[in-house]
Image (cartoon, rainbow, N blue to C red):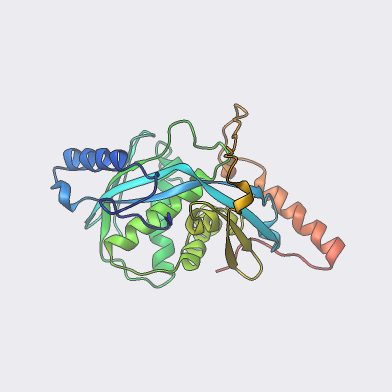
Length: 273
């Protein structure tokens, strides 16, 4: 099924694991002394992109698919934003009326900025946010900064959580743009729409093809010729973890822009909206 939004307790695919979701809901219930029935859970998967590196911010075609691991956010609506993480130290707390600047707190900056950015993104887009969320974030251990777009998964999961808490209906492509605002405008990363598009559009057994210039996507089902034989995708970890905000990624984007100007008479730039 689609990973765009998952309400646990209903029929779902092999990921998210219902036992993991139930365990996380139990943890939130115990940590914040709230009835477990009031705790909801949303999910966003990690992704693999066979074609896409430095193509999306130039308006090209990219492809990708989700894997069976990702980010879970168990939460309940609250007056402020109060979040902890099972993977990282620190806690996030802020008022909806006063959003701190990015990376103001070093201890939880690596993940707390995405919560702050999600609130700011929704408010800048004109969505009414009357309720924050209190809860816990959990990603797959040792998968952060490993090239599977854990940051986009985190940003998308938090957007879904805030939208659920405020009963806001947002289209998948609009959520792509909201996640881009988090990374482009709040964090200063000049990436394109590839990562959130794959995270939000992916469907089990399908390849997602995204036209980054037209901001459209197509789900391509796995052909019968591939079943059987069964196949697996091998992800190899180089041993180096890095968040893109701490790399030369923005320099690579600018180099691509300069190359586009010289070879095609113009440049694209990072995602719009």
